[in-house]
Amino acid sequence: MCCIRCVNVEPLRKPAFTGLGLLVLATGTMAAHATGTIAGTKIESVATASYSAMGSERLSVRSAVSSFRVDEMLDVTVVNSDPGDILAAAGAEGAALGFDITNNGNGQEQFSLTTVTALGQDDFDPQAPSIYLDHNGNGVFEPAIDALYVPGANDPALGPDQTLRVFVLAAIPDEAQDGQNGRLDLQATAVTLSGTAGLSAAGAGDDGVFAVVGPSGATASSSGRYEASAAALAFTKTATILDASGSQSPAPHAIITFALRAVVTGSGKLDALVLTDPVPAGTSYVPNSIHLDGIAQSDAPDGDAATLADNIVTINLGSVPGGTTRLATFQVRIQ
Image 1 (cartoon, rainbow, N blue to C red):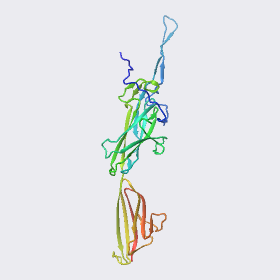
Image 2 (cartoon, helix red, strand yellow):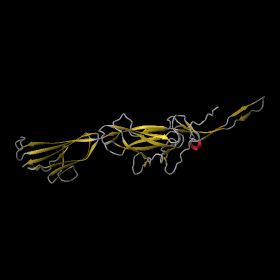
Image 3 (cartoon, rainbow, N blue to C red):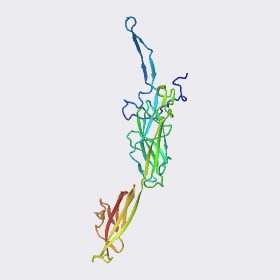
Image 4 (spheres, rainbow, N blue to C red):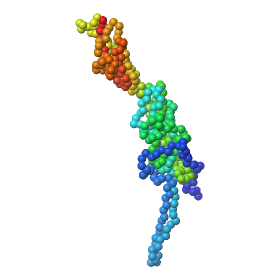
């Protein structure tokens, strides 16, 4: 008759935690655990039978001690921590997706991490992903602090119910169009054992107990999405003429009002947008005539957006998001 605890796979040894391993501190209390009692905990019990016979005093008999140690359950979840798609410009490198990995088992376990980008049902595949481990637990990607993940060298070790934030950085293809999205999966798998739920290995768990694969198969994954964000500029210049008689004849002394319209479209933004327009030959600039979105600007290089220098009107619009229209006007007089 087969033993009820016969081994399903070759016995495994828990990986040793060296200086290259990462021991992650708990992010919450340790009072309760996802799969119950801590692996290796000894559970003992003794039963008692009491009786009386033929009017004798009541007697009792104790059973032998029933003793066993709790097996280690291997279970994990992965959840995308971002509230929505991560916006990134086409061609951008290092756009970061966040994921939370939680050890739902009842023992300390290391997890190997992998990414998958060719998933389909999206517009592009994120390129050259790399994984970083949140070193200080603040949930914010900090390239100078967070550790680059190297498979097999610093597989994160998590205690029961511990959660680790990891960041996946990838590049957006140059050809990605505004509004298109690309999906990426992060997968975490228990180093000790994974596979069909219930699969076990003798001596592979904490303190040499059985390691048993939990409901997740000791592997889990979650998807995050990038959205390509781009912006385009439509720029026009128009002129309106008004002479002394009230007509639109470009006669001497007539006033020309130039209108510079910048329309930014798309979900991204344009940075350091600057409009420049030389005062045409045969005209003279009308002092302090520059307006931006209807607000008067000074000619001097001061705190506003406009300047007049060397007979050139310059308007510094700075960073302009998509869906924005900026209108600058100024006047010259025909000589």
